[in-house]
Image (cartoon, rainbow, N blue to C red; front, side, top):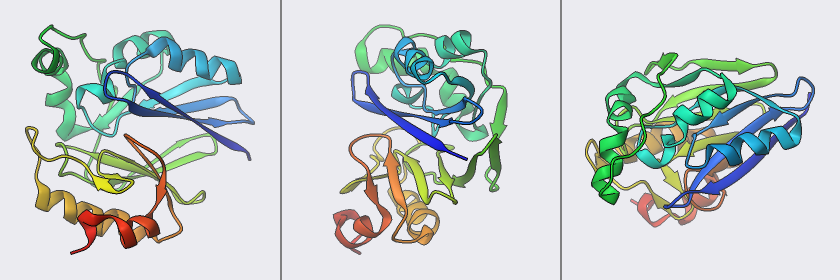
Length: 213
């Protein structure tokens, strides 16, 4: 079993997308279909991978902007949390609020994830869902227990946490999510976040100024 992760920083607000590929079966999972579907699709093709599943940590525009186009390119099902569905449908208006022009429609969801922990498997790729709201409604992080990796979306960053001044944001709830769902994973877990560089749970526990309370 060999897994490989490819990271991309794309779009107007430098959002991270992650391709996780099973090198034996050549199937992959994409976490966060951010801006530039052709580049993400080409990145999978360069590895000889077929994108078999598209996941979103949450439905802010910069994390789902390419969802419809990427689903059309790949035919892969698209999943996110049920509480993020309303914000996903409002993608064109989200985009308009930020940039003054109407944005693209989002992909239709094929699966709505729940608040209860779920295990998502594509061949040897195993992801456990962690419900981490506070930055946005229905925010989910995805944990790979065997690899000690968590994809934290916009819940936790290197040296920071997600903003909570947008609709549905809640600072108290976000800090609770980080404390109970992310910090509890252990200091040796690597964090791949929705913006910025990767970090570790241990580093953020010791140094993140928002968590020194």
